[in-house]
Image (tube, rainbow, N blue to C red; front, top):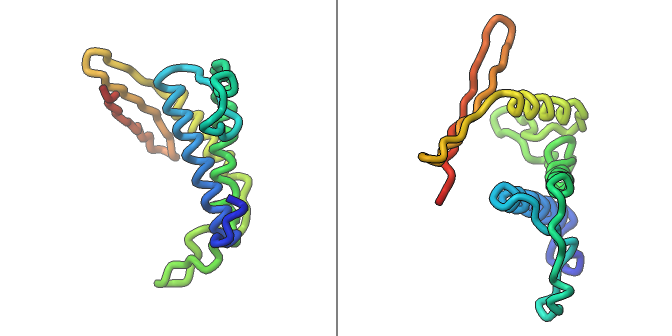
Length: 154
């Protein structure tokens, strides 16, 4: 990608972020479907030998670590203090769609939400192939229960 002369630095970084996100997402899908999978460190030439294309299955923790690092590469700092979007503003009042100052607390907030969701609950009905997840959020005197239903494809 660095050899492509038609891409600006901003476009190059954007494509790299998208690639990292897609890589993380599809590894996540593979791990969800098959459990631990081989982690391929780089592009393999199509004419490589079978031995060069053979990788051992990684551990579950190695897979999750790999996926997490790729998601982080995709997310930071694109939408948290990214000066490349300085001109992307709402026409109505000129407010930036993306904050221009990095805020480390955003990662803490995202982690807290993930923790709250994973500490919630969930069920899986094998006969209908339906996953149900929920978590409870208390805001002052009000308590909210958020639910999601996912259907596993065939």
